[in-house]
View (cartoon, rainbow, N blue to C red):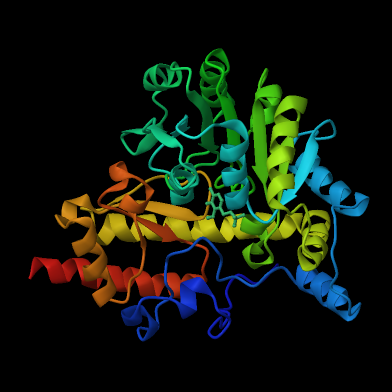
Length: 390
Ligand SMILES: Cc1ncc(COP(=O)(O)O)c(C=O)c1O
């Protein structure tokens, strides 16, 4: 058994979540529930591999060599039943940079790019900051389950200047793991309307309670129309090592992506990221299984606590990611008031409206933390809600 109980002191490491937390949280003893990295220690096998790499005493430039590629492709095959052999692999310093690279590679200024809100805020940023236009295909919620709106997608993708869709699969923040059928319906609409799909699958391993992830390239007919973005970082808590793996099969798309990467520089696999990724993918499958169990156990605790103590709040079911999605609209506060009120009780969440207008009144709650820390946060939440009744 690996250790998902011990708290790690991250203060003074420059950690955004900890060292840059809002002041009221810093003094509260509570762990901020923001930013999608984990409070769990990295798997010992990975720590050992990084230490060994440090012992070599030269931290030079490194590319994706055969050992690295074998580890990445091996994981995709074993874990996701996906043979990525015929795909070109691009190493980028993160999936976020890859989203921006894709926007630059596959669209022109002013073109439309579809995003499915509420969605990870960097999707909108990648579009807007590169002078492209956001085309919103909002997810719709039916009794706590978020679904895609295909009729709206058909309409939004029809204009010729809508060229790209950024898919979040599994979906941050609503916790959906899209089924093959759902992905096929989305894909068929995009293909019919000449829209390239960039599938951000960074949460692909974070599957709860038996959920199954479908690699978009494995959906019949989709491999040639898609860019698949993966990384070991989210799964294995390696975000600070800055490394991700982008797969493209279609040669024309690959050439366009390559041209932008070439122009902006890059293509390296950072030295320590290489060592960590090889160890993660070759040796740490069981660690991921235990991580998912620990996260889901936290989710169950959150859900039963809220049901028993705070029935006016709604906890959206979690199929994938370690990010719970809570509907706090019943508290009657606007987003700013909600954030300020929670902070008074030491609670820092990612406010729902960061992910789109239809995330308003929700909070995203990072569950990758030891359970005793979660318990403290749950009692703080109860206090925060009770204070509103007075
Ligand atoms: C959907 C999604 N994509 C990308 C990222 C970050 O990617 P990276 O750290 O590789 O740039 C996150 C982080 O939370 C995410 O949730």
